[in-house]
Image 1 (cartoon, rainbow, N blue to C red):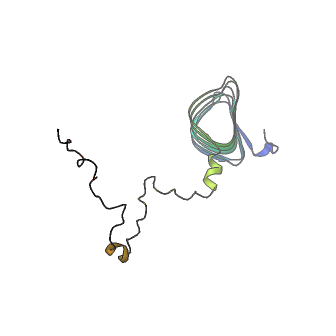
Image 2 (cartoon, rainbow, N blue to C red; image 1 turned 30 degrees about the horizontal axis):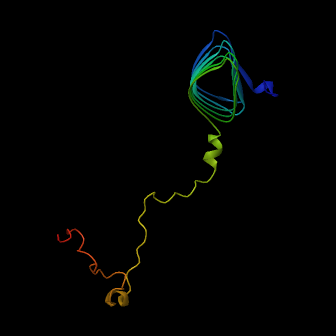
Image 3 (cartoon, one colour; image 1 turned 180 degrees about the horizontal axis):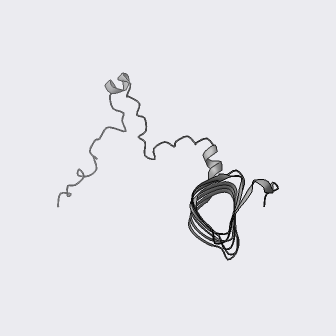
Length: 162
């Protein structure tokens, strides 16, 4: 638990709490439903069940949690059962924990980073330079002239039979 035990709360085993909870540190051994915003640590004990939107600096789950969880540090212990969306800069999932949903560690850092510049469209047309007026009026070059071959019939025609 946190160093300042006077600011820590405990929801005891068998207790049920529904609503919004704000505070420093909280240990849940019973059932909590609603919204939870903590400045410190949330610990969901092995008998605890939390169904809520949670924001806390540190979240440690040994029981059950369901909902949207945003934390700087999230630890899912061996007996944890977690379902929902989990966003944390630091994530630890111990062997035996069950996780169902979306896990996005580091997303909080990504939100603070500046967005990258958008990439150009993949098939953007190339710029076409206009033809200079002198080139329009110039006679075609020798390579561009098409003259029929002199040593055979024009293409597509059969040679005369003898």
